[in-house]
Length: 541
Ligand code: VG1
Ligand code: CO
Image (cartoon, rainbow, N blue to C red; front, side, top):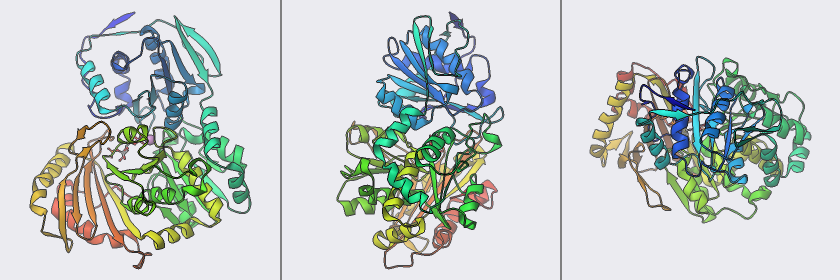
């Protein structure tokens, strides 16, 4: 059946790996369908191909699955693999796409954004390598939406997502699988669960917060099932359509209940949380928050503890705003390190070309070549494996790490939901001023470089410009500014601050104190509080 569209669809921001908007916008007639039509017209191999489909369980997930199934059938897809209750984390989807030789996947999630009728919804597109769609694909989808005048859909009743089963919609097969199983098997290949089990059961109590989002069922099977920790270790473990009203973003602000348990309580030795779609992670020890940039460095420095990585690393990559902590480890290991723009899609080529094994972002994202997405629970298991081998606390491990490699004091300040024009003006004004900064003094140091970061992909030669304003100082300190590409209300300004202290220096200071001169200087220079009217950031990490 062909449904004609009367108004053009103009809502897709080019350059993002999908469409992320309010649930209300997604409920407009033909809205979801128009975007899906553009995906199915653009993705290569749709006719006769296999597609993976699932989501993080938020409001709209199940309905979107039914719509996409009927549209996929109309477009001649051979088979769609979807999951019981439509539950499929982003890393698990990436794994399925790869293991099932699918042409790609559609993941229904707005990741760490809130959910429910008043929250956000999203449609993410992954390619045949299991990774987020590259810009070339999202741009092509975007141009397709611009001229769309109709979409194809088949009339069919809903498929049951209650149990595992196989169905047909017209000529298309629908396989409803358990979305947890394959992922658990993959983790069993990488980690020594018995060793983790011995360590934890020997008086190392842990707690995990799924924030009522997708990782609940995965964590229950991995932690309470395989590792055998007490039931209830996984808190907020049932995926809810509105995430129980909470913001499924694992940071100190939005996962504060867990943070309080670890930072102020004595009950647990280790705590972790993941985001809405399961690709991010926050790691906490007793009285100790692990900065995500440090987390990546610790993983890289300790791969010999983990069976899946015992052969060592090919190389590492980090996003530009991520601290240089992992670069220092790479240097020590004598392996290459790459600096990419923000967004997991930029790691795809490096992973596919086997140039790197580990990669990560400061935004609580770490991952490896086992899939093509960042992977929250994988990082949790990696940490538990290191701790089991070293038989030490998180705080001790961090101390050992810094006393060997030095400490990159780091913080990210987010100013959320600023008026878009104000944010844009602030940003472009600073961009224009940057060339004049080079050679002058900033927070008492000399500015060695000030520019808008551009990335040259060593694999396909592509160049991606304007990926963030950076001010580099002669002592290795940095301030980076970006406007978020994932927010749905106004604009979000992110400021990343970093200062390196040698192993012989004071490694036990508070990051906000160490960074205070940079914080003050950038506020004055970019007129942040003055222009936004916000005296302080909404989220400090
Ligand atoms: C944020 C993070 C970025 C991450 C992206 C998607 O983007 O900063 O590092 O890759 O979210 O993560 P931005 O443009 O808002 O800074 V997720 O968990 O949505 O897949
Ligand atoms: Co996410």
